[in-house]
Length: 330
Image (tube, rainbow, N blue to C red; front, side, top):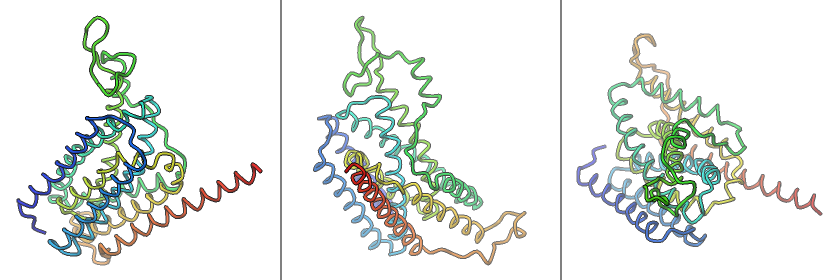
């Protein structure tokens, strides 16, 4: 897949432009967006992601479009799972609702930068060392086993960097709107507790990046598709946070669904590594002939089907639970 320089430039300029518009709108008027506003933003970003899939299909072929869609779906579903932790962090640090979208947008920008760095490192490693697929695949299988059946809300524990910031940085005792820097009564500059929230979001983003990037590398090794799928998956995450709200509690089988998706991609990566094997201590350094190839059509069907079943099962369970509670109340 050859991507011309001008295609890269136009794509990156367009994506950066969208982010700048988002930054401008949030900075101009910090507020808690309405359900209607969030709905239109989320629909708009999903429509853009699908339109871009059509562009990829027309320019690079159906296989490339399928890889992009599978990567976008996987990253988007992982982003929804990440919202659980964002909700907990916001509640833990008592950030006012009208300023939460500022924190979220800053976290998303930081997440994009971190993922950009990891994509570059991952692409370089894979191009030189095919055994990296073993590491990525094993990590995804381990993650899938760890989160399978986990249907409770995750807990947030302050990491060492957050504790250090609380102890060392000169901070005020209260928030000052969406500002990170202010002056105290004596005129000295001090940071506000919002800096700690940014550090918490940023370090959490780092962990999320370590989980999500091996997953998308298991679906495509094309940097252009990886970058665009990741960016489109993160766009609209801020509005989705407010749109879902309490509905996150109803996605009780989300972790199980993501476990199946990550486990499937992990196995796919290991099979791909076996098919391209050059490790001297495995099969004499030769590719393993029996390792089957899982096509992108199968991958897309498994990912989309698993997420659809997960969402439907979650809604059915919560509806049954709500009815049983209301029946018990009568």
